[in-house]
Image 1 (tube, rainbow, N blue to C red):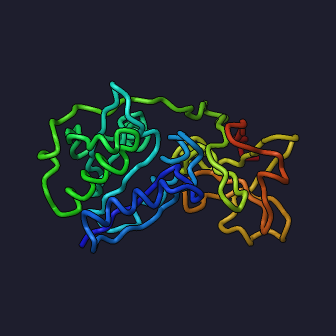
Image 2 (cartoon, rainbow, N blue to C red; image 1 turned 30 degrees about the horizontal axis):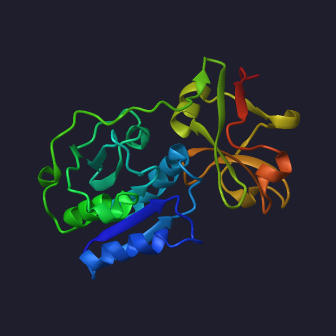
Length: 262
């Protein structure tokens, strides 16, 4: 049996997560369920997209990823199933698919047209999306779920601003360890840097002017920047919580300035 992953904002305190899992197991008792996380801040599509983008490619091709963010039923709510990079994603068409795609094109995009059980009218995650995910993981065609869509609902997120001499970005995510992950990709950094020295500026007039390869490259308690597993520019403190110690939090600005070689 295939794999279904779960990325939601349901938390661990209430019965919602258990209801979701129970609805899947009732349809497919032998399915392999994997929790990516249930601790996404409520309705935070950007947060969920960052987590999922950095996790999904570690799973085998054909894995189905349920996205349980802002899935509550409304009259104009559209639920979609998408095939992208050999993986399948199901969720509400609320903008998160456009964030995941990041200007790329899906292999398939389908509107899910399943009759909802009225018992689940307030919880389509455990009905419409569950049924669609189980349909896909059994190897059935996406086209049987509903009509083809040209593109998902677009949601624009803050992008870095750059010139030949600087990149202005912001904090996109703070992980459990307090590492600060920016929205400046390694690709963009290298494109603008062109081998030049740089200075990274952020809150409290703090600066860093050297890229590290790993967190322990500096003494314990010292700050550093690097491109980690996310492939985005990170600010960290070796064995410390950079976000708290540096006072740098979600959406705050960072700036990289590039200098001519001496």
